[in-house]
Each structure stands twice: as C-alpha cells, then as structure tokens.
Length: 148
Image (tube, rainbow, N blue to C red):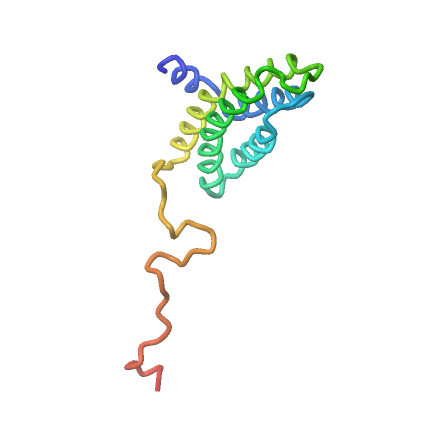
C-alpha cells in the first residue's frame, strides 16, 4: 500500500484520468464494464470544476465503488462467456485500468486535501436543495414594530 501511496503523491490526477479514459475507450471494443467511461468523463469534469469540492468527492467515492464492481464484472465475464473476438484485447485494457484505479483514488484524495477539503462526509446543508444551516429562516417576529 505504501508503494501505491508514493506513486499517487507523484502522479497528476488529470493525467491519470486521461489514461483511464483512453484505456476504457480501447477496452470498449468488446464486452466491458460500461460504467467506466461515464465515471472518467465525470471525473475529468469534477477535477476541472473549482467552485466546489463536492463533485470531486463524489467522483472519488464512485471510483472506489467501481473497484468492487470491476471485481464482480471480472468474475462474471472473465472467461469470455459470449465467445467474442477481440475480448482478450479489450480485457487487457480493462485490467490495466483496474490495476491503476487504487492509485487514482489516492491521487483524488490528495487533490481534495490540496483544495482544503477535510474529507468528512459533509453535512446535509451542502446537499442540493437543502435548507441553509439552522433549518428554517426567520420571517418576522410577531412582537416587533414591523409586524404592526
């Protein structure tokens, strides 16, 4: 794990996202995990979006979950059950992308820390459509002079 952490500190998230996207596109010539391409497009957008850390946090969480999904996908589809030509070629690129994913998660966490994010789960006031902190907004006080 220390090797992954050291490589992640030396890596650039934008470069890793470009690499993953390229590997996923080459891996799409046959049966592949279809969720990888949208995840990496979203990650590229989230990395470049500087107004909030929420998209990059979401990308990091989804990428971590995709590691588990990849394991399941490789278990279910690893033996080329449909007999597709080009499956080995596509599987090679998907496996390389899978191997690099933990380093990308670490790099994404490092990028969040560089942006000043404490990496907490956040609070509900940051959720889209949520009320501001405190829950309700005071409208008027019945005893005030403005009410009369």
